[in-house]
Length: 224
Image (cartoon, rainbow, N blue to C red):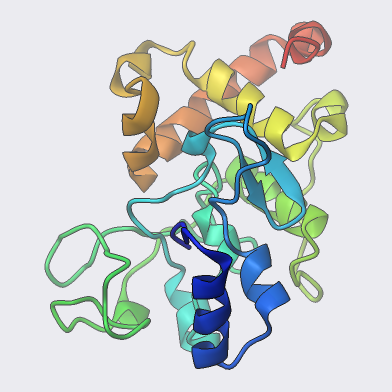
């Protein structure tokens, strides 16, 4: 959700949407954690220190979830979660109909502005690493995951799960940038515009480094 300059505006939106103010305020991502923490945000009950950890510019969707519930899920807004924790498929941010990046400003949740039904978008199976991350984060945030086969976390060092959500994302971002493709990651504000394909490359690179540096992860995580 975009930033509201006055809480009264958010209250008015809650009234129009027919939902409680507390539910809407909880999803108001651009709520600063304090005057001295510029760029810090609150995602549900988790504190995120970097703007690049949330996708403010282009939304992602899971066509399977849209087919089932016709709603956009908050967890899709986490930049480094590139797969659906329920359907184990990569999220998409491009319209299969017109080939353009999806927009927040579309009149219907299940349709692109070009008229294409996003529920009919083809999907690719996600790899075990990105699915595992998505499932573990969803469980941490109390998103529904019952009845879904859980992907084992054996390939991820145990110390990784002891970090905060912000720490996990910061570590993945750091390790992903150590790969040769790091030049594609712009500094500052531009990083929030990364597409799914770039984020997939980033997480896959981070996975490779995690596997190589298994014994050193505890030392690195101390600096996150």
